[in-house]
Amino acid sequence: MKFVDEVTIRVAAGNGGGGCLSFRREKYIPRGGPDGGDGGVGGSVWLEADAHLNTLVDYRYKRQFRARNGQPGMGRNRSGKSADDLVLVVPVGTVATDLDTQETMGDLVKPGQRLLVAKGGEGGLGNTRFKSSTNRAPRKTTPGTSGDQRELRLELKLLADVGLVGMPNAGKSTLIRAVSAARPKVADYPFTTLHPNLGVVRVGPLRSFVMADIPGLIEGAADGAGLGIRFLKHLSRTRLLLHLVDMSPYSDSGDPAADFKAVESELGKFSEGLSGAPRWLVLNKLDLLSETERETRIQGLLASLSWSGPVFRLSALTADGTQLLVFKVMDYLETMTPVEALTAPDGVELLPEDPAEDAP
Image (cartoon, rainbow, N blue to C red; front, side, top):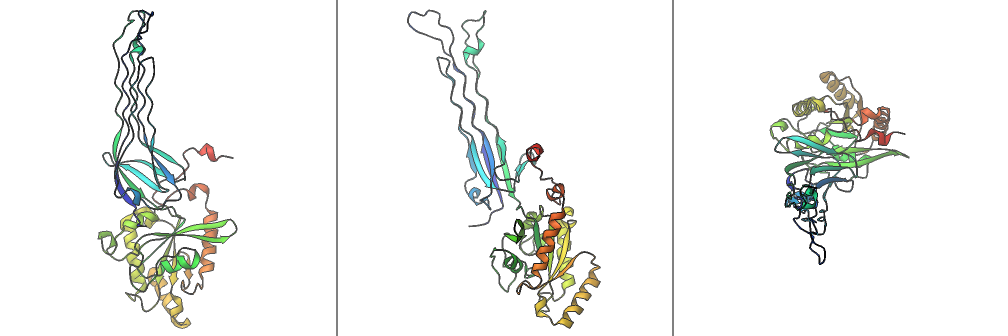
C-alpha cells in the first residue's frame, strides 16, 4: 500500500430541508388550519480516527465528499427526515486544517475520536410554527439553511514514543528490525527507506514503546536535497529522538562529526521544538572497527561535538548493545509524567478532550 501522509479534500455538509406550506383539508372539518411541518436537518461531515489505518491513500484520488440534504417538511405536521451524517475514517494522528483560514480545526490523537469539520444546515420552519390567535392562516415558511463547505488539508503525523534520525545508511532501518517485529527494507545504498516505518519494541510484560524510522537526512534537506524534510513532521510528537551516527570508516562521508552536525542543522531549520527535543547519541556499526580503532574514533567524535548527553555504542546488524539501549529508553519513558508524555516537542498538547473522562 502506498504511503500518503498529506492530502487536500473538499467537504460539504447537507442543506436543511425547507418548511412546508400546507393547510388541513378534510371532509366535514372546515377551517382546518395550517399543518405544514418543518424541514429535516442536513447531514454533517465528521472525521473519525481509526487505529487500523496508517495512510491517507484513500483520499488521494477521491477528494470531494458531500453529505445528503435534509428532506422538506410535509403536510399533516410531518417533519422532513434528517439526513445521516457522513463519517470519513482517517488514521490516528491526523491533523485537519481549513485551507481558507489556515485554522487548525482539530488533531485526532485517540482511536475513535471524532472531529466535526462541516455542520449540516438547519431545517426550515413550516407554516404551523407561525399560527397565532391573530394569524390563523399563516402562509409564511422559512427555507433550510445551507450546510458548511470547506477545503481541508489532512496531514498525518505518526504517533510514536521514539524517533530515529540520521544520515542515509546510518542503520536506522536495521536497528528497528533488530528491536521490533517491523521489517523495513534494508540495503547497502542510500535512501533505502522512502517512507516512515513504525515498530513496537517489547521490553517485557506490559512494557513496550513505539519506534519510528524516517528516511535519512542529508545536508541541504531543508532546501529539498535528497528526500527533503517532509517526513520530519512524523517526529514532532515523539518523546525522545535517537540520533544514529555511522562510525564505520566506509560511510559515505567518512566523517561522523560532519554527519552529526549536518543532521542537527537540518533539524534546527525544520523546527526549534524538534531540535530542542530530548536526543540521545547512538554510535552504530562498531562491529566494523577493531577495539583500538573503535575507542580512538569514538573519543575523537565526542571531543569534536562537545556532547554531554547519553551515548550508546552498538551494532544494529549483530544486535550487540541494542538490549541495553531499549531498556534505558523504556526506563526513561516510564519516568516521564503523564503531562510530559502527552506534550509534543513543538508545544502542542495532546491531552484528552475531556480530562474528567480519564480521572479515577
